Length: 92
Image (cartoon, rainbow, N blue to C red):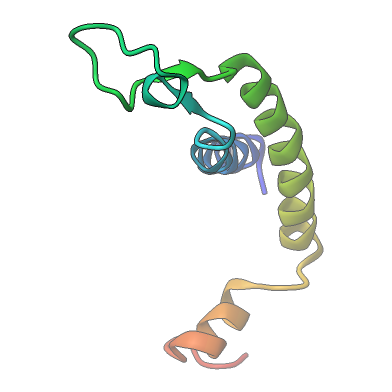
């Protein structure tokens, strides 16, 4: 895996993790009973995005290290995944 591949892998993992973490502990205007006129009751009031971004970065770094380790070690290859799912490449 090259440098660019590693950065792209980290970015994909980071954004997928971030999208999963954003709704956790989200307090909406409707939950707090302070609905600003002209906004939806589901609009976030307390979102803690900075904290969630740091948590996402830490979790993504751990997941990236595990996935990159598996890729670099060759424990699971593209041929293995193809053999389990599609069997189009054939076994070598």
